Length: 412
Image 1 (cartoon, rainbow, N blue to C red):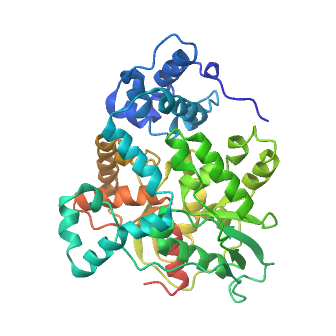
Image 2 (image 1 turned 120 degrees about the horizontal axis):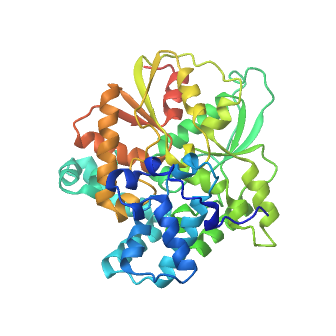
Image 3 (image 1 turned 90 degrees about the vertical axis):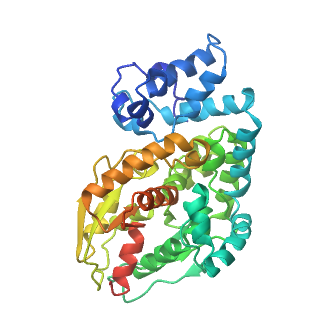
């Protein structure tokens, strides 16, 4: 096993400060990675107590891991803050409303069937036109995208012999996700279509479950580990790659080896599983991509999802794919890798900071005059689309794979 990260890895140089969204917004030391490491070390050494103020500073961390990208010492801040959150949830007494909110998040969002069931009344209201007025009055409902008809993915899709450029078919398995399959089913459909078009045999394991990220970020490490074990059992070990189209899910799947590093029954299997995980843009960028026959004549900008750019180090691949779509003019987004404020369920637990960061992102998008904002994570897509609507922007938020799929289907 690799050595466990320690607080002593941080030399307190401060190079992380300008990369940290909460420090940029608030300017307070305890809301920076360096300051939070001081707090976490103080808790571990029993030099300070877990007061409400200490818990508050730790709660305000987005877990975006931008500090890891900026850090010259290679501090694994993400692992440190996740461990601290386990401690906070075990020892800090939250108010009843906060407990209820966090409990509902962990109850509903990792369970696609329950989420789909709860959305049924909203689908009826949308069909009658009444949902639009509710969206205007409710911040939570306003974040929802258009509720499309749910279409299940096939368990297996065979490669398109006309689109593979003669390369040997690759066998891949797709993580369908929780929120992704309910609110962004079109992204999953596009992912399967593009993979098949590029010579892949795609499996969608029916026994798969939540990746565990929402549980881990909420301090429930045991539940996250249970999800990891179930997914390792569900996915066939002989596929060439495990494909993910949601950045937050992909980041955790790539870290199953660390999450289950102390489990003698799963540690080796977890490392082998993680070694095969690829974001769909990362996977496709490494292939000789079948040329899209259609055009999309549009100005497109790209937002770096935190757990894709900082968590997985995948930055160029999505841009590379977008540049291969005929007609697309790719425009760089200012502060492209600054967190949008979604951060999993952060926009539900910390709405004020999420609002500030979302408005900052929307303002940056407006400077690009883009017609499309490409985003490779469902939480980011919800947050950015909502803030753009609030700002009066007509820009459309899409996953990069959706634009590529549209070009394969003839473009617009």
